Amino acid sequence: MPRIVRCPICRTEVSWEESPHRPFCSERCRLIDLGAWSEGRYRVPGEKVEPEPEREDSDDEEGSL
Ligand SMILES: [Zn+2]
Image: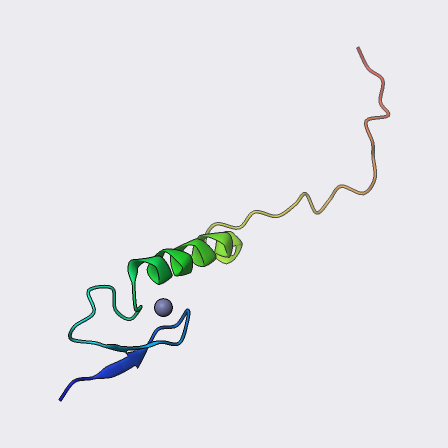
């Protein structure tokens, strides 16, 4: 009995046993998902990048040198 899953990207039904790119329907959708994931990787735990929270608006007005 073939298991049918839906491609998370385009919602095409694919056979789990037969698709080499499961759960995606094709390599294209797999790559799309990879790209989407890496764009969202600002939230990777353990890799916090905070945009200078202690800075208010000091715009280089020191004039030293
Ligand atoms: Zn797809």
